[in-house]
Length: 290
Image (cartoon, rainbow, N blue to C red; front, top):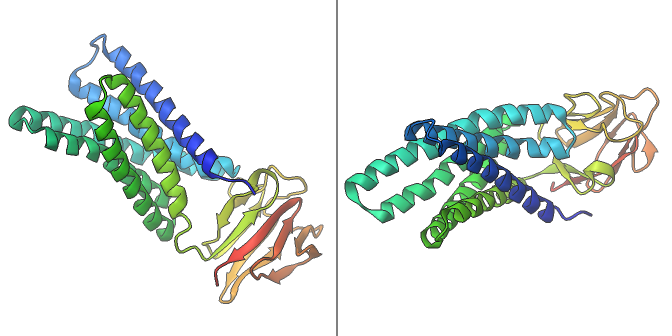
């Protein structure tokens, strides 16, 4: 089975590097003094927020080949990333400048600098729950994003305090935040998890797809909950997982009967922990803590 940690770390680092590059490009353009400092803060915060929000929220949909989830992730990530960037960076930076001028307290300034990342992380965590329309995912993502924001703020503040080159420390900060946010959201996603299917082959190999809804559709339609477009012999809404009081059942919607449980053709089959599901050429294992 694939180890997801290296891919999450690589994804987080790539996210941070991308936003670092875009932010430095904007700073370079701003050096020509086209804008005021307040507008520069607003644009920089917006760029950082939208970048982290959008890329973070499209990740699960992208790796699961689910275009519908990618679109929802891009929408909610952009909106709440923008708000988090404006409040976390533009507004707090402006407050920080005012306090620094009035009180000359570097400790308070460092605290506010670290708080920027917490604010942005919480907005992204909130957007994650809205994207999936789940109160369970919302509570988990807020927990994970809070941890990522706090730890990132502390680490980045320490790096900025001791780094002689702000250009480098800024880039390291973006990378740290990207990695911690990606890892934390992944790790908290298993808290309180009851039922899920684990991909055993193809694009979804090694990925756990949690079951939270009354009905999950599996197929090739853009709005199927579990997209199987990359697998052969799959049809639109090929099968569905239906939740009953005793647990989930797999229901076949395919006229050619290419839905299996433990490699036996089924029309509907109640599932138990460890069952092997075969939908077209896609293989999954049903897992439950009950």
